[in-house]
Length: 215
View (cartoon, rainbow, N blue to C red):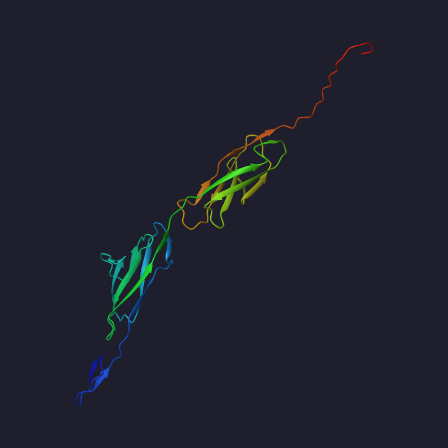
């Protein structure tokens, strides 16, 4: 009895036919195909019909990566890079013997967030007046978080903050962006310095003019 990959019978010899298998391989990153600039990605080969000991060769944009012959490959991709792997199966009857898989990477730039604040009705108010402060974010993402500070002490959260200032109070806001790709996560706004005027009682001055008896 002999074993082969093709059907054949000669004389009294019995040939056991083994079916051919089709190898394939896919590339998995664990983080999808979209990452931020500078992100190190581990690419893993997932073989089908690779046999007990398949071999690999990784490439970037068709250029073989030096020494990248394992089942995984770690690399910092650039936008549009095509990371591929060629797998050679050691199954008994692969058809064909090699298979290829690839992934095209989208790399987003890292942005810098910012935040500015304004006060209504302004930074000069009468004693006992409340002011509304509003934060305007840039690159804040879908759900930025805010921490309002008065003279360095945390006093509120959210995109708006209402409070009653004292004279010379310094108010600013720290914003933490929820944007995916950031050069820095938390940024600080401009400072607002408040002037609080004392409430003065109104006065009336009567001025007489003219002359004559009886005056």
